[in-house]
Length: 114
Image 1 (tube, one colour):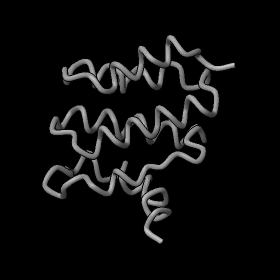
Image 2 (cartoon, helix red, strand yellow):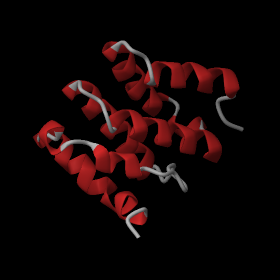
Image 3 (cartoon, one colour):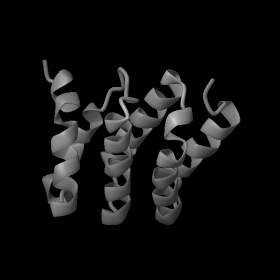
Image 4 (cartoon, one colour):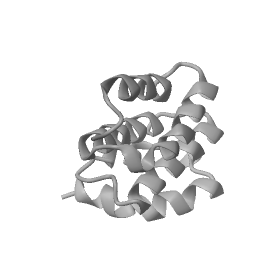
């Protein structure tokens, strides 16, 4: 079933917005529809979050993005998503509140390292 293309497009617009508050809201919204995503939708969302997190400058947005990815993973919704862009997050931007999320997502980062 899924949330449909229109809702998916609206969510993606939020996740890639120039406005940090909107990106954070979009990341939080990912959880609202967690059980409604089709496998393809969940994969697209996870890959978008990982890509955006890789160069996110806002500490709170990065936390929201990593939290959403962690929730997708916990709900077993990431499928075959490529989360390797998370490896590109500079160490200087990784704070204590981000470490647990990155540890939880570490198996996805190792997949592309081969």
